[in-house]
Image (tube, rainbow, N blue to C red; front, side, top):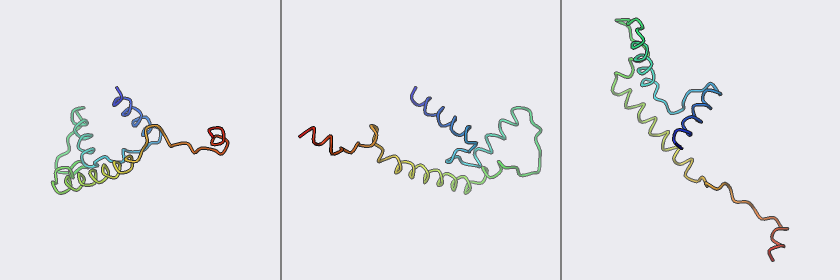
Length: 100
């Protein structure tokens, strides 16, 4: 349930801001879109290299995979210091005097 909520929040933010997912692999995304178009009986065009062609090049796929791994590592480092309870509140002088 928590995973579904997190995904829905991410999707909502992407839609509201009109942005693309930061860690998406462009050629894989283009291939998936083209597959959907073909399943929807879109006309197949022979002899032309479309946006999904880059996915067929192994070096290009591997390069995109490295980008995604780098982004995931950066995200892991970014959230490593998060405190689930929020930042610790600083004590004020008045609160310190009451405790004494």
